[in-house]
Image (cartoon, rainbow, N blue to C red; front, side, top):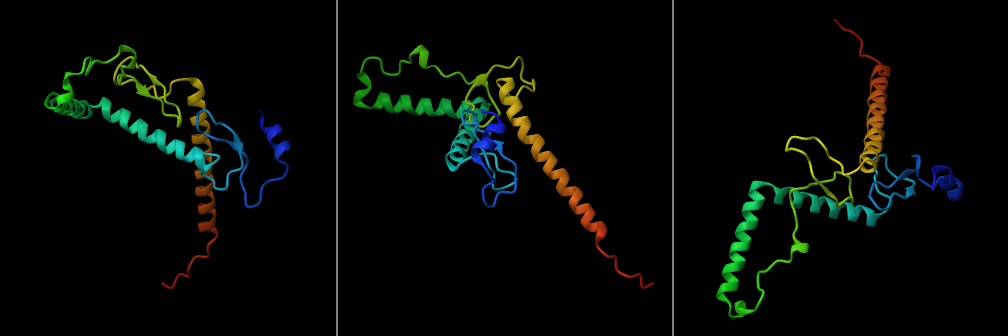
Length: 172
């Protein structure tokens, strides 16, 4: 659905909306919506909640990939094994065996686009790749460019307002 179709279908601008329609940033949604605030990124409360959930997931991915996170996970596993050995249920067959398909690999880096749960492999530790695909990169670039233009307009407006302000008379 292109922007013109959205504008024709929506008719006039909703009450209280001063901004142009834009796409929801959340991967998988990407609906057109009328923003109520200049820096809104998501079309609804459910998209905002999903983006918050994604941010928590991404933070845990980063922490688990760090040396401190790996050490804490090893400690958790050690305590779990001690509890299992002490309990009477420890004699169950297959306890502690992991299926190969369920193995979670934390060597990948999470994509920076909200709602994108894909991990991608980087060539080396200092590589600056932040997105799993070009689509994700362009979606976030669109938002960052719009916010940059907004900040530039605000700065220009403040400068003009300050230059129009009458200066106090010189009494020296």
